Image (cartoon, rainbow, N blue to C red; front, top):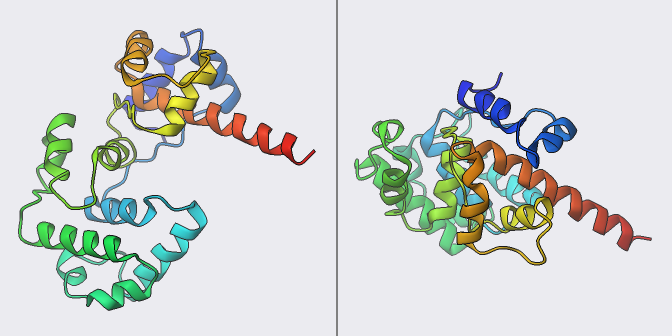
Length: 213
């Protein structure tokens, strides 16, 4: 079941000449709300700059360090030796980032219970205090864990490519141009971005198929 804000966004975007056809083609967006803030951020760190398959393997190995747990608490993660984290396939940097995240959650530097009440801008500022968590990671968290309805990650390559394809641009747009193009469908950017990603993925699949002859 769609989050009410996402459902409302779909209804609004159906009236847009660019997104109406995309909605008819790709159906309802897969934007399920997450519940565990710590888990979502750990997962985002693991998945940074990796293919989905490689990241999923490492993430599964990480979770296997805590048998019988749905997901470990920050206090449990911060006790894991650095080399043990490295042994599941995490880089030195990512192991450091995850330990830093666990420490900041455990000590209350990250006020996770207050996060749902913060504005998007406050959440970006708050979470980027953690090593390895930048604006893009927080944007993904806002979209896929909190289901905030109006997030536009202008630094995301797939979003740039989606704008280029959907709007028939000669090249991928800069942030200011994306903001201008998005103006008619704000405050529904999160749902719009899901369709921009679908457009980019579809184009990529066509190119690969043509390349194979």
